[in-house]
Length: 320
Image 1 (cartoon, rainbow, N blue to C red):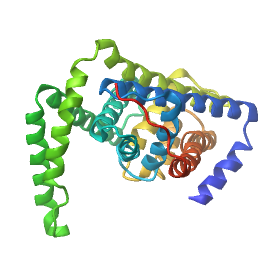
Image 2: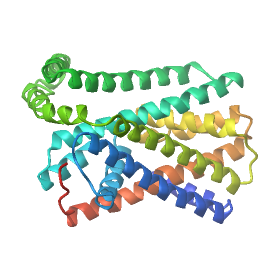
Image 3: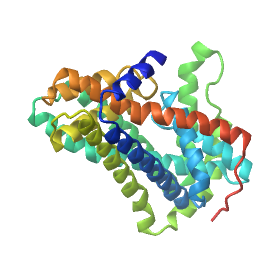
Image 4: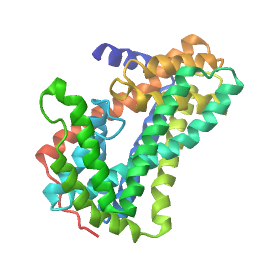
């Protein structure tokens, strides 16, 4: 994608550099906000992290999520690997990551609902957007049901995970000629997760609300970046345009079959802004600039962070 990256650099040169620099600074705040969200989620499962130690892990995990089409789940391998090196429970950390992703989905669905109302009123809502939203709702519901099931009974969670592994293996075996998922791994995960769920049940209610609140503030920061990009290219806009345009971009970033929506988000966001009465030329330029700040910039950060983590393991964090 080097050609697209070069195109984004050229696009930045067309805008007011001070607004673009401001947007880059807001994105740095966004990354800190995301790190705080992970920290809050990990606290719920009984794992304590210092914000400074967690920051490079979050950036590296984002890089992994960018290069895979996983809806934000593949980056958990970074946290699990770090937990093993620190002598912490990888299962607890994985559950904390699932809780973070669920909070992110729930917060975004709130924003998406507003975005869909705006698109519907402006006759910009199509069947493709509705189907994509349905996929996201199903994914969020699946994660939520697994967490609720684990909170109720570790044995029930184990039965569901083992049954899921068997079902996936039954479907995949004719193609792969081997088991795709290990039933023993599902059993061991459910067993190890029992302590994590016990810690989650002991948490005060305000601890549960904090990851969701931070996820909402993260969405507000991303919308603010889009606002600054509009200013950088001197394009008129409304609050509805910002919310609806961001909603579709983030929706297809999650549910796209390509990693982080490469090649899809750019087209969808451009057409969405066009349907919101932004001229096609400025819509394309704004989309490229926004993706440059929110996709390519953290991609570069994450590459550096992943190299840093490989060479400089961080100091242990205490379990709480």
